[in-house]
Figure 1: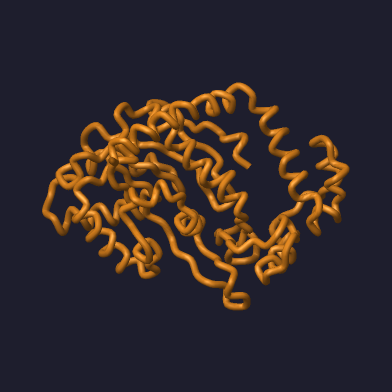
Figure 2: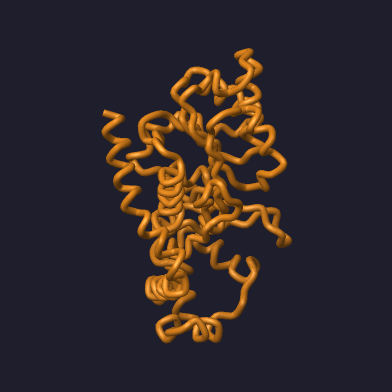
Length: 302
């Protein structure tokens, strides 16, 4: 059954390559379309009406209607949304807010993550990553075996408990499409453990008991700690002795260059390494040529 699912997904991803080609060759038009879609969707919000979104037709119009803001310039609007107010910056109510370390006077920023953002940016960006991975790695089996996704956690916002705040990775996990759930090695609350030392042990347990692990995704620094703990507990020389079917490590968050040698020691043969630029603000880019440095900007994903 899983072989069939992987084959169907592979065919779907093969068809999606045309979208990747459009990004390469028609970027300006795609960006103009995204701008119009966002303005049309948000023109009846409080912010949209205050800045006459309905009259905006071009980029120059947008620049003249909407002043350049930093986080503090829109913080009061975001706080209203976190308290459950609808249609402030985006139509309807927004339940999820991604927590980001910022350079403003606040220790953290809380950025609205609407349902449309999850679908059009985060999930679409994940499919773009899978599309390029399957294109670059012959015989990919990510939808046949298990994958370990290493991420952060979330909590309910105390002044308005229906609002959820957390790392973007946690919000993505809460919103994972049903097709991906059976292939995730971490299930339920295991993904969201807050204590880091406990999390390492739980993930090491899962990894040691999942010999058919085929992919891992996460920040290199976090991932190295988990992988080293698995080797320490198992006494194995490298990870391919534990995960013989492993195909790829998908990474982001920090420059991979200082960690490349370590990962080649952990996975000494035949493993693909793919970089993504997925931040709290958006899923911006993916490495589409694994033998070359640099990433492709995802110009039409919201």
